[in-house]
Image (tube, rainbow, N blue to C red; front, side, top):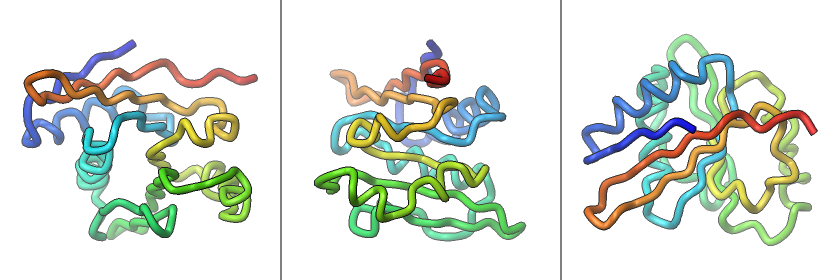
Length: 144
């Protein structure tokens, strides 16, 4: 398990670089953390590193946002906080996104864990007593 300490928001870039370099072949990241832990801020930093030109914000109401870079790279950003059942995720056509080969960053993945494909990288964001963030990055989810 990899540990990345983020003492402040200005260190998010470093965490994004480490994450992308360490898991270069993987495209799906499951972001676990409490409300306000920094999941969306981390996705923003990663998207900047990937050259995304779109504004990156939480996709709370549409469930998924699509971001594009100048060279037409695509990133999908999911927020499943508000889903009530898996039928909503099926209706979204999640498989088209997850198996597209594009980056997928999933907030609140615990609500859809049985749908996460093999190779998904679990990333847990903790906030310590000093309000520093710690990323705990686990091995990819194995094939079932």
